[in-house]
Length: 231
Image (cartoon, rainbow, N blue to C red; front, side):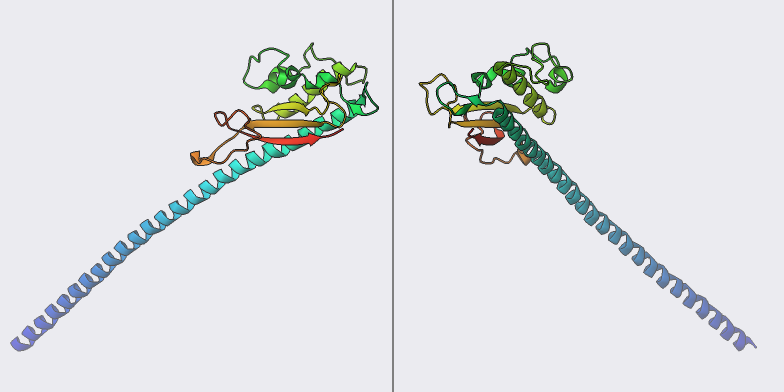
């Protein structure tokens, strides 16, 4: 009986020892698995953060490109609008039978509200376009002189321009092919309509600027749209 009791005690002790070893092994495996899981989570978070930064960068570049495209498309529309106004206002020249516009159209102060005084706010559209200033003739009914039409058309296209791009400006010049006559832009001459606005560089990356848009140099870089018209 004594030997059997010793054997039973031995077997019981052995069973307890085996259970302890099994529990220890399971604990080590679980501990290792928890460690690997944490590393995987950290790696996943790192990769996810890189991806989110990439998406944010693409959205920023996309919005930048969209703004530039909007400025250009609106500028094209407004240059064409002024070209149509010039054609509608053209009359027979005093020197021959060709069509010319009134000399007042080439008065720089008529454009960009330069004849209306300083703007008290940051948005020129709010200053000048919500209500028609008293200095601007109302030619919507068609009862105006040629010079009044010039002031009205210049005001209208200036409002159309700053309604979408407050920093943009418009100009009308002429390469006169007959400086001796009384017309500021003689028949057959090239009328140049140019709309310009401040150029924006992404990440301060220098880029080659258009010399036509920046005749005074690159101190104040600008983008522009140019439309040449011959009446």
